[in-house]
Structure formats: C-alpha cells, structure tokens
Image (cartoon, rainbow, N blue to C red; front, side, top):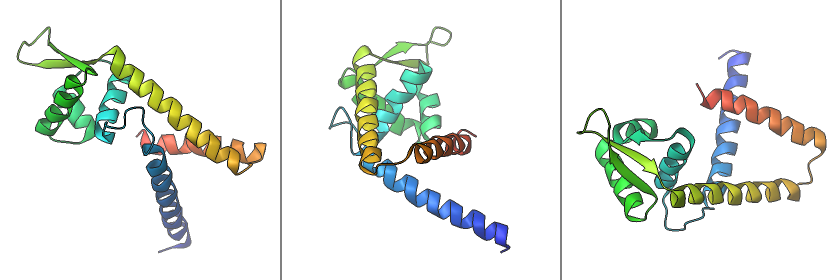
Length: 146
C-alpha cells in the first residue's frame, strides 16, 4: 500500500471503532425498553419519510420481507403503527406511524441527545474542539448518505 492508502485505511479503522462504540452507547438508551433496535429504526424511518410499503421498509432496513412483516406485526400490536390498504393496489399494504409511535421516536432521540451532550460535557471540550466535532459530523453524513 502507498502512504495515502495507509492513511485512508487507518482513518477508516479509527472511524469504524469510534462510531461503533458511540452507537452502542447510544443504542442502550430508548424510550421503550422492550423495543428492539430494528423496531425503532422502522419507526424512525416512518416518522421521517412517512407512509411506506412493507417491501420498501424491508429494502431500506436490508432485511427480508417476511422479517419486516414480523417487525410490523409487533409494532402494530403495541399500537405504534397502522396498516392501510394501498389506494392504487389493494393487494399492497401501506404502513403509517401512529402518534404513540412518533412519541417513542421523539423521546428516544431526546434521551440519546441528552446522553451524548452529557458525555461531551464530561470531557470539557473547548469551543474549537466542539466545532471540529460538528464539522466531522457533516463529513460522516456525507459518507453515510451516499
């Protein structure tokens, strides 16, 4: 490998390890203890993008349609989503988030933001360091949004 390749590989390794550890800490906090990460991801997707078909949700979460059906069944039983027949094709079903489901997402985000803010406050970062973290988050979003 060349020096730029080495630098890229080291950066990728460091970034992967840091984001994995941070994500694990943040995932430990959720508004409903009985909710899985997969269920919360589906609710967050529905809250952000609106009504979706089960196949679209499965594709976005990279799971098989039967697995997504099971996830939706559980969320529906808890009152977090509702199914409605597709207006154009009655064989398809659309999934919508309920107010209770939206509340779970909002509260989980709030709790995770508080946790992360507390973690940052404990380290007493300078304003310049906080600016660097904000700038890094923009770059990380570019990586994940492609």
